[in-house]
Length: 472
Image 1 (tube, rainbow, N blue to C red):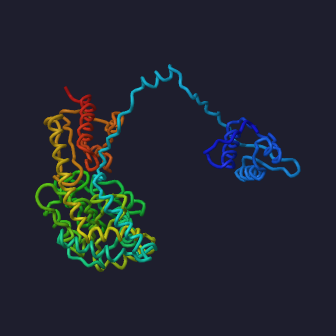
Image 2: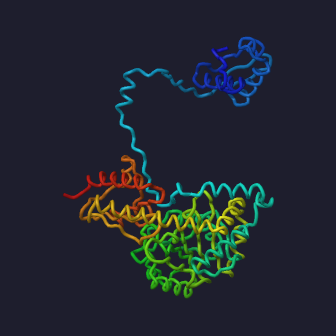
Image 3: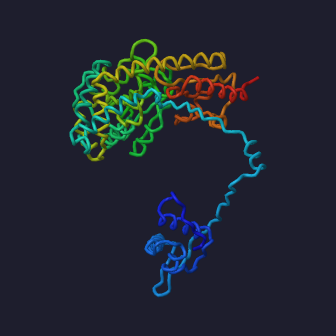
């Protein structure tokens, strides 16, 4: 019937015949109004059981390809937009082969994503062992929605880690588990939406922060950042009370540290004007020079909500972050989380709790700190070799990204999005800025998930691109 032949190993005959008739109708080979053979004759022609043909006709009638008229038969339905069938040449001619070979292959994309850790060093076998053990032997409630605040074992492990490594004395009852920092920001924005209508964000900063608050009808005030972090003095005492979102340990994308003077200024401002501060501490574990920067939360535990994440230290696929909330706010935050039904996988939480308690998290951090330090030194060395003094590396020696400033007396204005044509993806400061045009020549290079060979090749392509913009 209509040239159909079932193929061995290509699925059931029912599925193959359905697919074949759909294609024939969509291509226009079977025209609207055409009557199909009765099921008994079609089955005889095809050498298949009649019930298969009946099932196919019924399926395609349900999908709208066919119509059935009582006493008349089955017909191709009207009103189906046809498309030309693609003609496939099984053996390309020598001319077409020559043309395809003459087209240059697109270079492999090198993505300087600032948010990805080195996934090649994720402890896969160890992690899968913990997940398997949790799945096989843990109590049944880890398969349910679980505690809305988060698994007690994980909250206790995090509280112990924060005190031991960062000096933060907090109760496990102050910790709320989230599915990453973005969910934590959403939760806090929702919690405070009846109380505040204003948020002060760093400028430039990661885009989702402002997006979340704007969706909840906050007025977003971008406050510019320099080499000492957010310019807190720009928030006047008579400005509306609200939330101040800071990355004091390693600002993104500039890489600056909020100075002690500005930390004290931020705390004094929050206490006097009624603000709350959200401290986004996304990668302070990876400081490559000197000791770790103390959390801002230590200066005012009642005014600072601390947000941490395992996306940068382990993997974003875990979807686990956490908040440390002042005791007087915890009930309100949990109530909002319950209303929004925001939960995190109990299996992932259980595995992570064991991973931390058995000491593997500390060992992983220690190993990755050395790896990221080596990569940053490699970038600095390559930049000196390729660009000399025409480019500055800015920001603290920490984390998994650097700021490159292509000096404007050496280069003209560059459209960094054109880099993708050379197989490089990176972000300029403009991509993170609300106030455009204030950071010419500045880009962010994330090196966490790149090898040294990829970094070297990426920088070579950047040199190739920027050379066309050099001032002679």
